[in-house]
Amino acid sequence: MTAARVVLRPLRPDDAPTIVAYRSDPEVARYQSWAPTLDDVLGTIDAPGARAPFAPGTWTQLGIALHASGELIGDVGVHVFEGEPLQAEFGITLATAFQGRGYATEALRALLALLFDDLGKHRVTASVDPRNARSIALMRRAGFRQEGHLVESLRFKGAWADDLVFAMLAREWQHHRASR
Ligand SMILES: CC(C)(COP(=O)(O)OP(=O)(O)OC[C@H]1O[C@@H](n2cnc3c(N)ncnc32)[C@H](O)[C@@H]1OP(=O)(O)O)[C@@H](O)C(=O)NCCC(=O)NCCS
Image 1 (cartoon, rainbow, N blue to C red):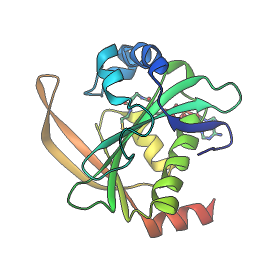
Image 2: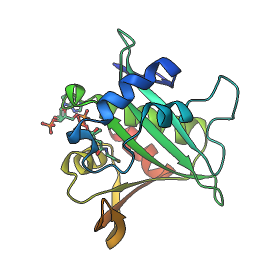
Image 3: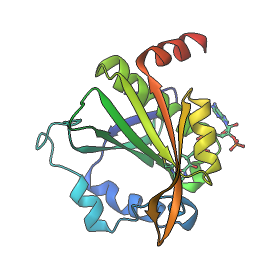
């Protein structure tokens, strides 16, 4: 899965220290519920062939790497719903040093091509904290439609937090892709 400048690829055990380092950055962790230890990250990385990626009811974690150097700069997690495997949700994270250059936009478009074009998903969603301006801007750049604002629906870091739901249907992806 290659975009112009970034590649989505399976994670490897030697990626774990990098992931822990950028996810420990308070700027990156502010609106995220997963602040993993090395063991937590290693627990998400399967031996090659151990588990089918994108299996219903599971999360699949992919790395975002620079195409030119192979350097890992972020990750995406994809959850395919157990009861409705034609629907998936995702979360996306970039190390702070690599934000602000359009890498997340490219990675997200590569992910949408994978989910809609290769895996035939019908609907893809993301849940975003309304205070997370960079994430909201990313959703809009990638063509997502805001379809819900849930009020104090999540217990997050000891307080109730709102939740914006962004969604894209397969036909909206086709339209977005054609209009670019
Ligand atoms: C959410 C997140 C991935 C967005 O990253 P981002 O760097 O803002 O997004 P992009 O990589 O697409 O970069 C967009 C910026 O690059 C600029 N840019 C430069 N070249 C670009 C290009 N070719 N294409 C698109 N944007 C480009 C845009 O103008 C935009 O600039 P701005 O930040 O001044 O508005 C990032 O903020 C993050 O990891 N946050 C912490 C984790 C988190 O909260 N994740 C959300 C959970 S769903």
